[in-house]
Length: 64
Figure 1 (tube, rainbow, N blue to C red):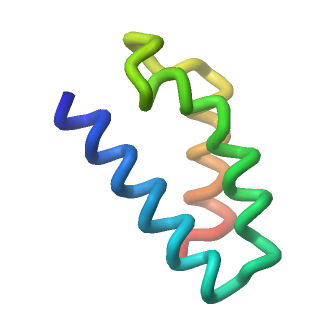
Figure 2: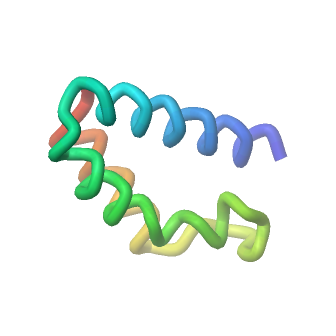
């Protein structure tokens, strides 16, 4: 449960920062992290491969 909350906070902070710093990038980040929604909301017990690859891509390409 703590891991899910941490992931939600990381995503929320990332979206918040990017919304003000680089508004054009926010849609890209959201679309890449959208596959994580079922895991974050508790509808899936593990994140899917598309969630992991999307998060990996965001971290690698937009680490700020």
